[in-house]
Each structure stands twice: as C-alpha cells, then as structure tokens.
Amino acid sequence: MTVNVLVVDDEERVLGLAKSTIDLDGSHGIRMAARPPRRATPINPALSLLDMLMPKKGGITVCRGLKELPEMHNVKITLLVVTAAGPQPRPW
Image (cartoon, rainbow, N blue to C red; front, top):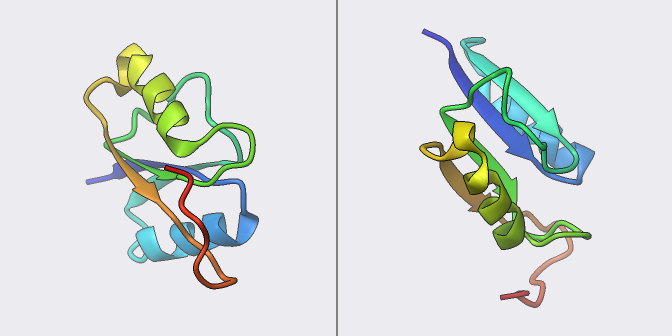
C-alpha cells in the first residue's frame, strides 16, 4: 500500500533527509516542496511534514493556509524544527 507524504521545507538538505528516511522501503509517494503548495493534489497526502522556520511565512501560518484547502482538511500535519547550528531562538 502506498502512503503519500507532503514535505515542505526551504532547505534542500532537510528535504533530502526526509525523503531518504521516509521512503526506506519505496512504498511512499513523497512530494517535496521548497515553499508551501497552493494545492495538495495530485498526491492527496495522508501526512504532511512542515518546517516551522521558513523565511517568508512561519510554519503556523502555512499550516493554517494548508488546513483551509478542502483536500488538506483531514490531513495530519507535523511541524518540524531542524537546525544544524545549535539552539536557535524560538519564533513562537
């Protein structure tokens, strides 16, 4: 069974890490995005992983926008913070 996952992050390294971690067995359809999509289709994700610290719009704002899309209303969204430079001040 294929499970579709939408991953939104502005860092290519994080997108690559997410793809390699999620798709270990090749049974996941993964859509990667450097910015929030206007529509979640055509993959109809079961889960979305969303970066909290995107430069133009924060993760909470993007999450609210995604939840307004009819096709994303019932999709679970997990907010992520990935840093490589040590602790960062929290924007919330």
